[in-house]
Amino acid sequence: MTDRDQSAERGETERRELEAAGWEPKGHGAKTIWQSPADGRWYAHHLAVVMLAEKGPNREEARLLDEHGFERASGDGMPDGRERWVRLEEGLRQYTRSQALIKARREGA
Image (cartoon, rainbow, N blue to C red):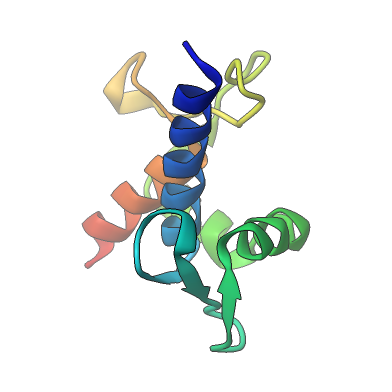
């Protein structure tokens, strides 16, 4: 995998995580700006990613994951350092935090 491929994959991962946390995108690609769910202001992609990482665990997200049966998987996490989440009724299926949040929000709607 080339550096360019890794960068594109990382960008898509960051996009999914921002969307799962409630950020709204405007545009696509390198010039995407993001509207914060907390203050409604618009931020550059990189700054939005940094803000999301610094924010830490969200109590509402934790409650939502718990309500829908998601648990943090034991083990070392994903190769890229992200957490894994599971639902016992789904067997070995593992989710990233953003994937689990998206699924829980869909089921709650």
